[in-house]
Image (cartoon, rainbow, N blue to C red; front, side, top):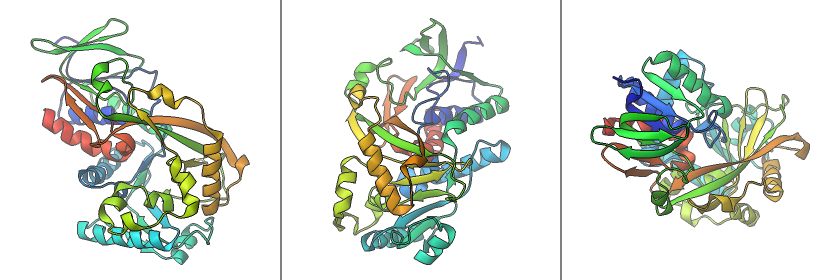
Amino acid sequence: MKTNTYDLIVVGGGILGTFHAYHALKKGLRVLQLEKDNFPVGSTVRNFGQVVPSGMAGEWFDYGVRGLEIYQSIQQEMDISIRNNGSIYIASDADEVQVIHELSAHYQTKGYAHALWSQEQILAKYPALNADYVKEAIVFEQELSAEPETMIRQLHIFMQAKFEKYTLKYDTTVIACEDGNALARLTTSSLDVFEGAKIIICNGYEFKILYRSLFDDSGLEISKLQMMRTKPLQHIQLPGNILTGLTIRRYESFEEYCPSFGAIPVPEHYNELRKYGIHILFKQATDGSIIVGDSHEYAAGNRLDELGFAVDTYINELMIAEANRIIPMQKDWIASSWSGFYSQHKDHILEVDISPRIHVRTGIGGKGMTASAGYAEQSIEKLF
């Protein structure tokens, strides 16, 4: 077999593409993975690093639960920054308390382990929280978190060490892809040519290079998120994924499985926050810094530029003010702020088979960190 011929070529080095490569390698296939940047810098690294199946619905919940198993199995072999610190959704008023009780009833039928905590239990573990905000919480101790800036590169290192049939090339932009008589072929910007029995394109939000006309009418949209990180705060301990009232009012599991979800009123002070798609999450890194966010602004998939590159100070101030209702937080604690982008689709993911050998799998949106591992496993099973 020629060295530039593979069973599978994956275009895209983010979490979705990487787990497609991982599961193909587990089947013994010869895999090439190509990433256009010097290393992944897209939505895979610009997020909280929360693995929270509890926020998913339908098959995506199942993918997330399977993902917990996959992440932990890899972590047992090599440290890819996965930590089992659990998730907690904190209800701040009676309506949110009602909703988390309804979600608890649903997860009892699913056998998904969880607990309802009182205000006293929450404050005992998280004494930094403002008592006035905290009413009750639903807790999922089995859920995971990662360090998003390092996890994907550690995962690539792990795969390179474990699988002899794995080739990873950073700084390699694919400019053309076509099906041939026996194999699919792609060409890079360096005019290198690679052939594969199958090609899977997991291109995140990059829609201007390959199959642009497809993405012009695909139903994809781009979400711009703003996030912040504090300086290390050793006097505050926030283990796990901390999700709050606005998250309860946003995540699809609550919308899908909680009968009262659609009827609960929106408090006046939430209206401005919802205008910018703000819901407040916290995730403390190993150095003591805390990621705080996030906001959501939207544009059509082929209009990314309209969202701009600037970080909006007003949005950050709204997030800090709401965060301060939950945990005393000072503006001068914020050490950095950034915007991230991801593509999402009304059907949860865009699956297009360009030909029998060329397949597009993208637009997983905010589900990527949680669901990619489980979704990619069944995706590879279908294709091979």
